Image (tube, rainbow, N blue to C red; front, side):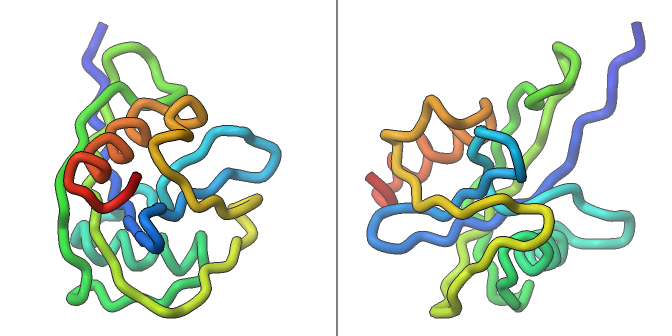
Length: 135
C-alpha cells in the first residue's frame, strides 16, 4: 500500500492566564488547535494567520508569529501511518477571539483537558506545559 503524504498544517497557540485557546467544530466533541492545512505557495506562518482569521476571527500579522515547535504524530481520523506535521506559532493579541462558521465553540484549555484532544492536540498541550506556558 502506498504511503500517504504527511498532512502539513499550521496552528496558533494563544495563551492567556496559563490556558491555551482551542476550538471544537460544530457538532463535534474533540478539541483542536485553531489552524489548518498549509496551501500551496503559502508559508507556515501565513497559513497560521489565515486559519486564525477563518476559525476564530483574529487578524494576525504572519511576521509577528513566533514558531514554538513542530508536532509530528498520527493524524486524527486518518488511516494508520498517516502523519500530521503541525507547526505551532505563539501569538499575542488583546483581540477577543470569536467562533467562525467552521467552529462551534471556543475553549480555554489546560493539560486537564488532554482526554478531549486528538494526538496532535495532546502533544501540543504537553509541550506547552513543559515550557511553562500553561498548566
